Image (tube, rainbow over the protein chains, first blue to last red):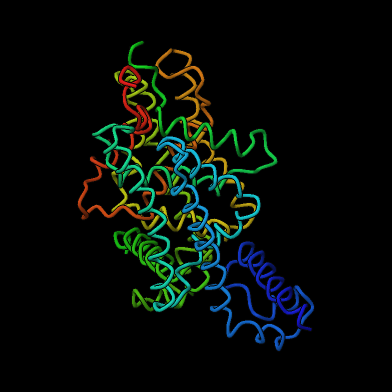
Length: 199
Length: 199
């Protein structure tokens, strides 16, 4: 039993995530989750106090993992500002296949967390954005990015481009995650207009 | 009565929209909508066959209005490609105060439309995106945008930046809609790196 328990908790979380994505959090009951796995409600409640606890677990794991990955990029002294921007975009798009359902459920169902739980998640979500803002600000100060750039809006632009791809990007489509991330990084860094020398 | 009927239909749609945004589509009953307005279910069903019909009405009105506005920009011969890109971004951000709830409900609750209704909405939503893609493609062909830009991804980038602002932009905040739209258009058009001549 000791070896099986961690596996079952993960199985419950994964089955729930799929149901939350397909049907929505409200439309999915604990019984639905149990039916999906062929387990009893007793098993569910052994691992999770409630459906809300499970949602909180899913959200927390999602954002904590993203923050850890982001930290690895931001603290890598071998990367330039430009390379860090590219790496953050790539990390967000790379794992859409694996993390897409998690991301979509995160953005859509967060309102179902109670205030206490939101108070724990929202600062983590904001931290991810503020770290990007700080990266852009440092880049502006170092002269790597243009001085008239508003770091706050540049961070929102980066997140908008990357997070929106959760709505449409299919890793088995015509473009790979690397191609999409590269194209987005180029648009964000260089814009879509020709080199000013050619204007 | 003749004069009141159109008003009541709009009142029902607006009250429902606010409830759908706050509580979610599933969590809002026809009775909740009627309670909010102090009307009977008979009044509701006089105007809408079902809650789903109402959601369809809200979605259709949202996307049809956006398409009409977009058409006005794209067909304006006085605007350059660059100005059209700016104008499309500005039209999406300008009306967030008025249209924000509609946009958030659109993106979050569309899955509650049945297949027949989705088949009517999805092509309209796609058309809005394809029109932007076509604008960028024409701009690339005319030399206004760089030849290596992928018009499809540039359209997704524009929509990502603009649609994501529905999640965070408050028109009464520190930045006006015009400032945000201008900053986003500049990032998209010119990127965040310095002029290549200075590199």
